[in-house]
Every structure is written in C-alpha cells, then in structure tokens.
Image (cartoon, rainbow, N blue to C red; front, side, top):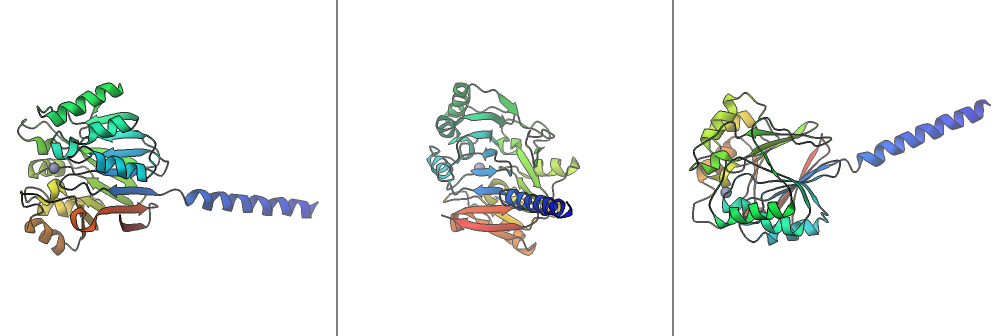
Length: 277
Ligand SMILES: [Zn+2]
C-alpha cells in the first residue's frame, strides 16, 4: 500500500514539475522594433499570446505586414496609433486590410492628411470604434500591465507630437516605455502627474530629436536600454544632443537604421536583446 502511495506522490511531483517548466518556456514577452526607415513600428507579443501593434511607419505598410507575416501573426488584438503623423499612421491602413484587428486605440486628435483619412476609413471598414488613448487607460491584457501614461491633457492641434499616446508595459521586473513622438511639454506633464515612468527599455521619443528626451525625463525613466527608431531623413534625427545624453547616462542604445530590427525577449526576470534580419 505504502509503495503504491509513494509511487503516486512521485508521479504527481514529476507531472507538476514538468507542467511548470513546460509552460514557463513559452511565457516570454517579446517586443520587436521593426526597421521601417524614418518612422515607428513596434510589434509586441504578450506571454499569453496577444498581438499588439504600435504604429506602422510612413510607407504603404508593407514593411510591417511582411514582418508580421514572418512572425506568423494571425490576427491583432490591439492596434495603437500614437498620433496622426504620416510616419506613424501611414502604414496602419494596409495592416488593417491584411489583418483582423480586434481593437484600435488612438489619442483624441484629428488631422487632415490623406494618411490619417485612410487610417480612419480602414478602421471604419474593420467595423471597430476607436478607443481613446490617454493617461490612465489600461489595456485589458492578461499577464502584463499596460497603461497609457500620456497624453496627460489636451494640447493645441498644431502640437501633434505632444498628443502622442505613450504606453508603459510591465512584465514582472522588466518594463518598456513607448513614447511615440512626445516632446518636452508632454514629458514634463508626465513627470508632474506622478505616474510610474521607470522602464528597462525606452523607445526614444521623436526619433532622437532634441525636442524630446530631456535630461530630467531620462532620469525619471532610468532605462538600461534605449532604441531610436530612425531612417534616412532631412530633419537631422537623431541629434547628437540626445545620443550623447544617452551615452553619458550609460544607456545601451540601438538604432534601427544601423542595427535593423531589434528584438527584446523577457521572461519577467531576464532580458535579452537581438538584432534580427
Ligand atoms: Zn515621427
């Protein structure tokens, strides 16, 4: 009797250990900063398998769609348009044509460009209503905490960059801050609002322009890694001011124009970074 009982205990222990390690192996959060030239496009896969896309570059969206297909993405649970500028919103309509998208988040600001009109039309065709991205809005996701920390308030229509939806994503001890093109005014408002801004990885604001990533904002975020999403451009992005500021703060910085697609993988404790073709 005792032998059978012990056998059961051993069998039970074996199965539970196996089950734990088996599931732990797939419980990674991956964040891909896709090289779309001058613009932003970020793909996130949560530990429970939800697919999130932030922006899709300036072109027809083909870079993003090709990349997502390579990653075997089947549908997109959440799409975030940080702000209506063409180098962010430009490719989202093509992604909406290629994929079933369950929900779309965007800040409450309009723009008159064709790129933005195409985006609105594609969202309408998809049959979804845009949810407002603003400070305090939490994405309904399991296993991670994803909260918009900006826009904190309304800005003038001419200040499109400051309207950028800024998402802070947390998984265990690791975190990310995706800033869109938020500039100094938004950075100051985020800091004043006393929200948690600290992040392991900072997606540098506005392609490394000197109107973003102030010294005090960098101190508040305290990143270990930074990524500048940038391509050939006539704006002088990224500026040496920001590049040097990151360097002197000892932040390991990647650039999509030099490093290609950047992939972060974390189990909530460890973080690895890889450059992927
Ligand atoms: Zn931009």
